[in-house]
Length: 209
Image (cartoon, rainbow, N blue to C red):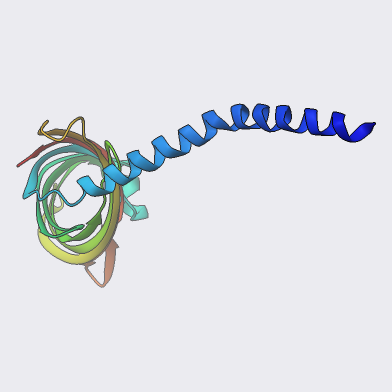
């Protein structure tokens, strides 16, 4: 008596299960096709970018923060060149200028920093999202001027960086981007050192060519 009912119910249950999982299966297929197309696009050759950057840079040295206050605006130009699939070379030239007050006399003090960075990074393309991560070397030229005197000097160091581009279409050459960078640079200051390294973040527009 029970077996005929069982045979009648099971096909109906299987049909309902197929209908229930059909949207999920379709979504998986669409996602898989999209990711496959995205990684295929990563093989499209490209030469590089010219970049316009604006952001914030916080010099880590405690004495610097006392005179000039934490953080500061930094702007610059950048250039990238594709060396191999997923590998880029990059070069950045930036400028940072700050005004502050000397700790004891409260006299004005001016500080100008010219950071030059170059390095290598790995980059991928996943649909319109292009993340990257890299590391490289830094050359800092800086000037400090106040009633005590004027100091010009330079220092070298290294950095790690990461971020992403947004690409709206394969042929659209304007790429908005966001980038973070941690720099490690120390300069001689009398008998000690000053830590000019710090955390940088910002974004801008890149022109792909």
